[in-house]
Length: 140
Image (cartoon, rainbow, N blue to C red):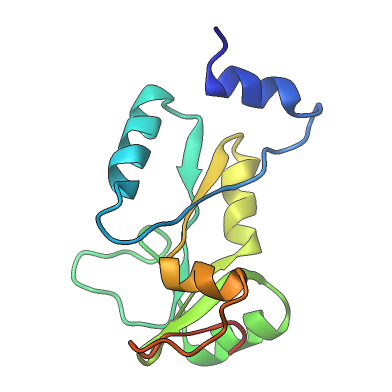
């Protein structure tokens, strides 16, 4: 029986990167457990993109490892240039997955995993209401 990775490799055209895989679900749905098992079963095959954020780094966080830390002006410019796959505002901070961050993972020969908040997925699936928790999604 072929593994998921064998199938993935066989359906790709020569030199073509695999499409990113989006994982989304409510808190407690088991996303972290699923991803942990996937990474353990197929070491070196999958990778996470490093998201951008305008929030300040927390103690122990490093730019380019947990997040690409940036200011609001630079973030907004990248949004306006079409540089994000998705972006959202949580409270007063912006978060987003840049096209370049995904290309960095796929360029290393790995399949990019996008762990996208459920609220953001509602927006991209057509539910554009402002959420009760203050989340706004889409263009800044």
